[in-house]
Length: 120
Length: 329
Image 1 (tube, helix red, strand yellow):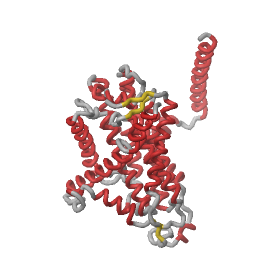
Image 2: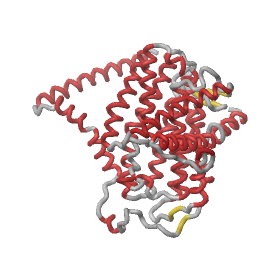
Image 3: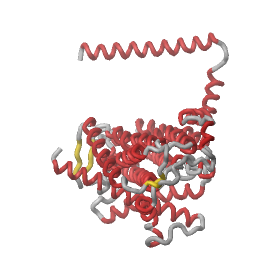
């Protein structure tokens, strides 16, 4: 039961985003009123004065990367132990092989796409 | 589209099952979680407002919206914060149009991507902008924790959603990778051994992702009050805090609704117009909330690195294995 409207994907993006914005506007208008207090305009830093902010605070991005790196340390360690042996020639051979494989894949893709383009 | 169709879609996105319905469902879900956790921990939980305290979340919201005043924070950007939270709410309310519960549904080829964008990516970025518009050292730490977890939660959630849509597409869905068409056949996806395993694993991954998205214990790390006061919402007060709390409840209700439809078959074996079907839908929804509550009541808070490790090395791989199995199914 109910009405099901099947539309192309690009139109779907436009419609859904449009309705999302409409609802957002309704929410914004419905919750806009409310008194703004005169007191408590200062920052809450656990009772400290704002002078403490002269001490540098890490940014959101720095904290993010610190947390990700700390959490994924076992993965990095496993990779380092498996891959890194300290010999430059081994690294060169590995990278050359990888680039060679990627070049072959790219060549196949170019030939395939070119073939499909010229002789559809 | 005709004006009647546009009107029906507008009704669906604002009233049922959009903004108003989702808000009511979110408030009910909050009450259910609080009451059940309290009973599991030998406490009373919400008691005084409404039968068994059912109306307590609603009254808390009304109080914050209309009685409490907002802190005139000197560094805050009031419009940006409200706009961010409103856009997040709008994205979730509009996404319900792609679920079978809506009387007017939208579908299209590969709409699972649109669904993920509007219901997951848009609310996340809008919320982060809203949080950072009230800066504070605790907010900075809380938001960084939120973003760190989201890096692994959102891929897990999206990959888990891809599983039923992929299996439905491989089985000849009329519209490929459609959330709506996958939802109406989701009960059939459990019938074959290979797709059964894929569905089971993706259900587990989606439930874990929802638990972490809703920041229920053990994933309530961004607002760990013993360390960060209120974390990412330290400077929020009055109507702004009400709006954030509502968004949190709506996200939980929406996520549980998505799992109920995409993985548990919605009202199957009955239809939406059958009263028994509606009861079945409610039972499945409440059963999912019960599982979330059970985990919340029994687990202590994880450290951020433990949580990320769990999401990156347990939840996400489970979702990826499920997706690989779904392609083989």
